[in-house]
Length: 310
Image 1: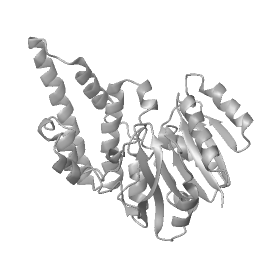
Image 2: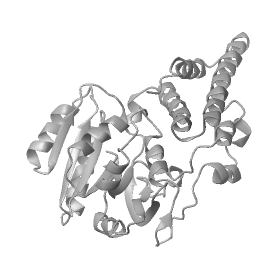
Image 3: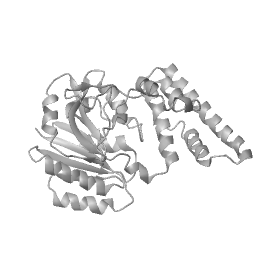
Image 4: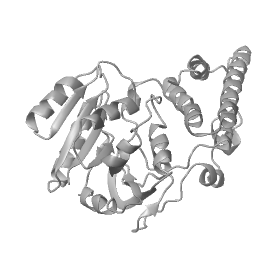
C-alpha cells in the first residue's frame, strides 16, 4: 500500500532535505511518494528542492506563487497524491527508525481516523507540550489574556485546560483528543471525506480543526513509535509579534468554525477588549519609561487582522 508524504516548505529547504534523507534511509521497504509544496519561499529553496526531485524519482515538487498558508499548501499536495495513506509531515521531523509499517497496520481498523507518534526534541526529551486539548474560553482567559500571569506556571491548570493526558513510557496506543500537526498519518479517503484542511486558517489551529472534525466519526491515537522534532523552524524566519498574532487570530477562527455563535462572539469580544487594554496599559507605562513596543505591535496586529478569517 502506497504512502503519500506531504511536506510544506517555507525557507526550510535544508531541514526538508534532512527530513527526506531520513525517510528514505529508514523507510526503504515502504512504497512511497514525497510531495514537497513550497509556500513561495524567498531563499534558495527552489534550487535545492528542484535538485532533490531530479535526484529522487519518488519526489514531486509544487511551487506556489504566493503564500496562502499551511492548510492551503497541504491541500494542494494531497490533490496530486496517489497513495492509499497520507502523512502530513513538518520539514523539521527526522526519522530515527522505521515507523510507517506499524502505523499502516493500525489504520486497518475502521474506527481509527488518524494516528500520530511521540515527538522528541534533539535533546531526546519527550515534547509533551505538543499534545493538547481543544481550545476553551477559560483557556484563553487563563493563559493568553491580560489576567494570565498568575496562572502561566500552574501545572494543575495546564493539565486541566491545555495538555492532553499522554504518557511517554506507555507502549500501547493512547487515545488523544488531537494529534500534533507535525506528524498526522491517515487514510487518504478520510482526508478527502473531510475535504482536507480548512483553508480559512493561515497559520496555527488548522491541524486542531482537522482533528476536531476527524474525531466526530473516528478515534485518534498516538503510537509508541517516535521521531525527532526540531520545532518552530520556519517560524524563526518571521517576527515574534506576527507569530503570536496569527496564533490568537486562528484561536478565534477555531471557535468560528466549530463552536456555537454565542461562544464565537464571546471569544471575539474577549480578544478585542484584551488587546485594547494591553495597548492602553503599555501607553500608560510610557510615563515611567517602562513601555514595551513589542506588546503594542502584537496587539495592533491582532486588531488590524481581527476580521481576516476567510
